Image 1 (cartoon, one colour):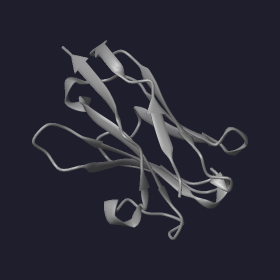
Image 2: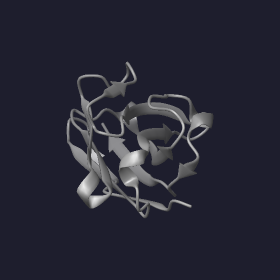
Image 3: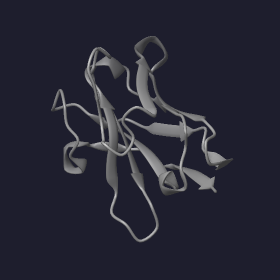
Image 4: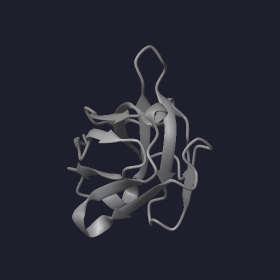
Length: 124
């Protein structure tokens, strides 16, 4: 069982930056592909970004490409999401997730473990 705890969300203005963090309880954190997803009110949870086990591979949703950066520190069991040039449409609850079976995936069902989420609210 892996427990994931997100932090770093909050209210910001359009154009601001935030860095989300997610700490995992897993003893073998480096064996998990890690992803960030988000869910806005009334909408389905959607993929934001994932990072490979070693951190050498990343992939982003088109809506955040060039603005968001995912990274990880396997020594600290932590994955980050740096969010720059935030827009009101980025408002959502952001979740980190862990996936032990697939080296790369943007599909929600492929992720076995999920955090409780952290709210990001971007006002114009």
